[in-house]
Amino acid sequence: MAHVSFGAVGTPIVIGVNKGLDTTAISAQLVQQGLDWDSFLQLITSQVAMIHGAIGTFMPLFMVMMLTRFFGKNKSWREGFAIWPFAIFAGLAFTVPYTLTGVFLGPEFPSLVGGLVSITIVVNAAKRGFLVPKTTWDFVPQKSWPSEWLGKLVVSKEDITPTLSDKNMSTVMAWFPYLLVALLLVFSRVFAGFQSLLNSMTVDLTSILSEADISASFSPLYLPGGLLLISALVAAAIQTKKPVNALNDAFKESSKTVLGAGFVLIFTIPMVRIFINSGVNLSDVASMPVASAELFAGTFGNTFPLISATIGALGAFIAGSNTVSNMMFSQFQYEAAMSLRVSPSLIIAAQAVGTAAGNMIAIHNVVAASATVGLLGMEGATLRRTILPTLYYVLFCGIIVMAAIYIFGFQGPLAS
Image (cartoon, rainbow, N blue to C red; front, side, top):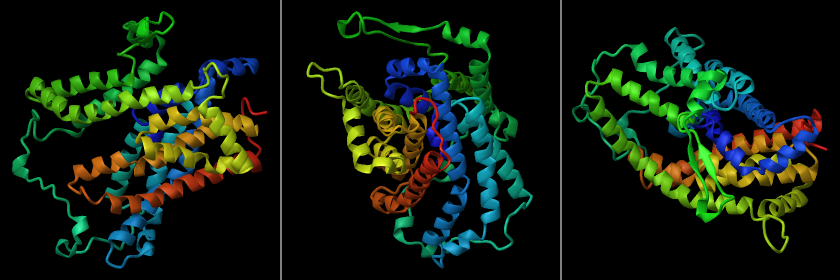
């Protein structure tokens, strides 16, 4: 779950939080303290990574315990707990490089680096039996499975047509595209010359909606999506016999997801921008984030940090997107923190962590996953189980944030 807060190479932070906050006003306040926006965003990134590092370490153990409780013959939590040494080791194998990457490199890399490092460590450790319990656990025979376990999707070997240039592809060749993505991301964010080269190609939009003051621009090669596309082209060229056919098949398959998500975003993003900029009105009425922040801060008072992650989770549940939840509620969380005079960066970090938890119970995510494995119609059963790790995550995130503010006295920039 920890990887979701940084998602597609940092998008939930770089786009979600960035676009969800009034960066102009906040930057002006930061300047008064000798800081800038980039350092503030990096502080949020570091805090998100550290909170996930603390909570996410125990997620593998929690998930194994759920496996034995809901899918085991004895319906026992204790059976899953028997693997705790290896499970916590596996959690640390991800969270340690993940947290260090978030703190020192920024939001684009934690999920990627954490995943690559952990899979290498954990797979090799499991092969060697390191910390693996001597007793084994398995599902009951398939003939005894209840109907809700059985998906309608059946794939046979005959349905799979090899397209690879070499059926016995080496491990290095198989992993090369992922390593290339990592290298391109690091070089584009660390080396100024390469960064300038990628940013030299820009797409500029001016006079949007015939308004001279409204414009936008972006650099497609510098964006994470551009780097992923470059890696995909390289992968098709070196891993397949017919690159054009492979790319065509991939395009057809991915378009189904892209078009579905894009259709939702066409309506969601304008709604979010209206929500954020609703304070620009002739009646001098407070914006919706400000009004909501005042209501929640007044209702929950000093305990508001305890529910900040829950609000983020609800946003992801409704919108089905970590990024969109951050866009909707980052300003709201910021205003609430300012009202309570606590660290806004820490409260926004709790929002970003909460959205990762809420992504597990987002309706269209559950429906999409169910459709993928042939379990349409079983969404209710899925939600009843995924709500447990969601509650674990938002509860402990709230406790950590409350402790940081009221026990350890953390304030940070802009807290007064």
